[in-house]
Amino acid sequence: MLIEDSRRSALLAPKSRPFGVERPASDSDFMSIGDVSRSYGLSLRALRFYEERGLLQPLRRGVTRLYDTKTRARLELILKGKQLGFTLTEIRGMIEEAEDNSASPSLALAPGQVLDQIALLERQRHDLDIAIEELRATHLRMLGSDGATAPQAAVA
Image (cartoon, rainbow, N blue to C red; front, top):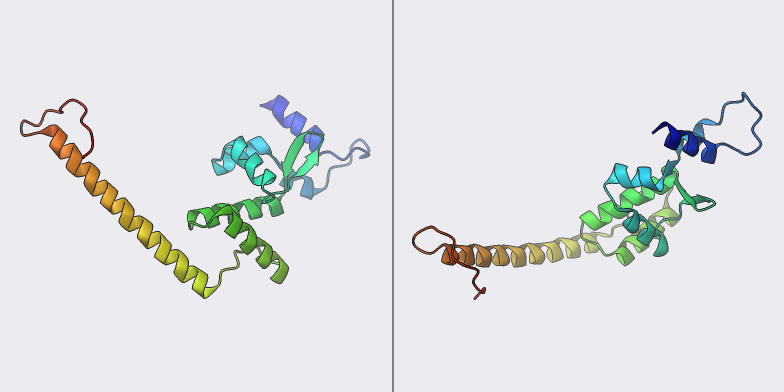
């Protein structure tokens, strides 16, 4: 752990800083891709995918990706948009629109868009409820009358 911390400090330290001069407080706001992955419960692959799609632009020091507070705030918006059921394309548009129109990080949502998303999620919930009902009925048929689990059966 100490080796990893010292490597990270070396990566974040300005190249021309004289010995004994403390680094600016803003350097402590950087996190490596591994730190972000652990903090947000995301895979490294997911973070790289968001970068490939143009949703995130972490700073680079060589091959090392560094996430500052602004980039992490943008990641939080992406995750919020996903939680609300929006596609990555929709999320990108909402974030870019919000960044163009205000300084505070947010998703730019129109009232109609909110209502459309609610309707979509309600349809998905209905479909999930039907699927759950069908699986429960199948499970009960599999148990049969004696309560013992029958061999694997095809879903009817």
